[in-house]
Image (cartoon, rainbow, N blue to C red; front, side, top):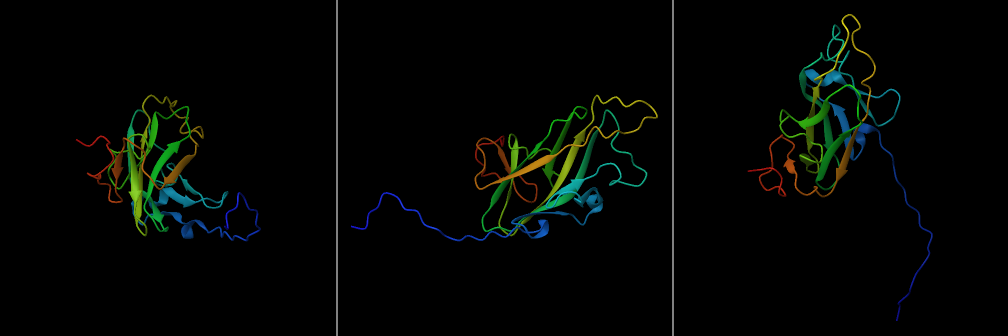
Length: 185
């Protein structure tokens, strides 16, 4: 009858690991004024480092205290795959910063954290990502300047389905009115 319960067979599979700019989900600095913040990592392959201190300007020592900073279009995420993908970001906790969030284009109203919103990037499209940094309550002693206490990692997760109950932001930073039940009124 041709039916069988199980089978074991040796097969060959090839997986090529691409450089960051050629990966299925590629990260690149933008060509805008905030692109100097984003740099390919010199310590780890396939990683982008964001430097809000020296990367902003030569005279900068970083964001000031009790402020909210918004940096539009720092880097781009390219979907070089074959299907739409939904991205969310997650940040390691930092002892000093009130919050750090990624957003699309200039839409800082919708942080792409997977709880409030995700960004949908169609195959062959790219989204320009910015960041909001809230330094409320940080106490830096006069003359001490910035410290290295705020080095932390951000993780970007790509999925083929959006999570339930969040806003879906497109690659232009607009909320998708046909979302899946997020905060759209």
